[in-house]
Structure formats: structure tokens, C-alpha cells
Image: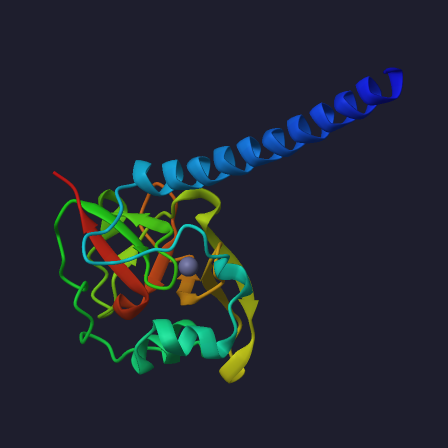
Length: 180
Ligand SMILES: [Zn+2]
């Protein structure tokens, strides 16, 4: 009898620990989903909240991005000046990463730089990272998405107040989500 009870108890404990781990997993997924909803999920732009965008291979990216987007985001390319669709966009909203839909820039920090690329004087916190870039014989600071590490552009110190920074970003590496 004692042995049976012990086995039953052990079984009960095992079932509990299983259900607990399932609950915490679900909570984590919900938490991830909340993050994307709170910044307004882009319309017609799908983001898989179960996918780990930091772990995707080049082949994975080729299946997600167009060839031009791949060239910019994954090969650090630059679109020609004044050709991007967001250069003159003055609408209110959030610019998210074209690779993983992480919100990177707000429209209220966008300014007219005259360079031919969308320009912002500030970023959305740690969603945007800066990396030293000494390519092409220049000392510049590259700007990448904090989640998928996709190339966005460069940041310079000749921007307007209050930051004095100029984030010079490719339209093709962004997706604009309008806000009311
Ligand atoms: Zn990204």
C-alpha cells in the first residue's frame, strides 16, 4: 500500500512539473505576442513571433526577402539616393525592420536631411545597435537591427537637436506602419 501511494505521489509530481513547464512556455509565447501587438503589427507584413530571427541562415533570408532587400539587409548594401519610397514620407507612424518587424524609428524623429535617404535624429532604444564600420576606406558607424542584425544604414554626428545625430537609413530595410 505504501509503495503504491509513493508511486502515485511520484506520478502526481511528474504530471505537475510537466504542466508547469507547459504553462510557462505558453506565457512566454503570449509575452512575445504582446510585444509585437503593442507596437502595432504591420498590415500586409507578416511576422512569425515563434521564429528566432537572430538564428536564420542566408538561405532562410533569401526565402523571406526580395533580392534587393537581401542585398541591403544581409550584404550591407545601399539603395541609390532619392529612390527609396520613404524619403519624403511625412505620415505619422513607426518604421519597423523589414527583416523581422522590430520597431526601429518613430516618424516624430524623422527630418528632412536632403541626402536622399530617410533620416532620423533618434532611434527606438536598444532596438537599433551601432557597430564600427571601417569599410571603403572610411571610418563610419553602421546601424543594424538589434534583433536580426540586418543592416539599416549609418549614423553620423551632424544631425539636428536634441541628439545631434543623423541616422541615415535605407527605405528598403524598413517597413512603415501608419498610426492614427
Ligand atoms: Zn530586424
